[in-house]
Amino acid sequence: MEPETEPTVGTGQLIEKVLKIRRCAAVIKGGRRFSFTALVVVGDGQGRVGWGYGKANEVPPAVEKALKHAQRNMITVPLEGETIPHKVWGHFGTSRVVLIPAGPGTGVIAGMAVKAVCDACGIRNILTKCYGSTNPHNVVKATVEALKSLRSRSEVERLRGVVLS
Image (cartoon, rainbow, N blue to C red; front, side, top):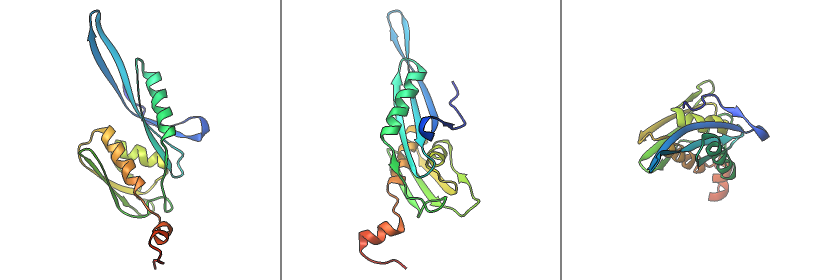
């Protein structure tokens, strides 16, 4: 069960990417009963991104549930062109992720989970590094936490009540 490697565009022009599918086995009287979980990242490629997690007895319903969860929990990310406004750290559990803005033509230098989030969000030039646990679930959550803490220049000026030069 290899997860999809290419993002697919579904209804509403959302980029949907299945990151991880896990199989769980429960031993019962008649043998083993399998269930599946799916981790999915969804974005519009223009600054909105969300992640979802779904569980079901078959793979397609698990993916559908994860997509529904991801679409409900989308966040808006302030972008500066095709990169982010400033360096930012995000952490969840023992996973820590650093996102560093990069110049044009750099591309997305990232691991699988961070790359999926950045591609879905519409970030085209960024440098990233993961520290600690590389569990895809925690890395995705840490990346989304980092993106949530981004502030645009105008927002910082408004919050501080000053003009930055």
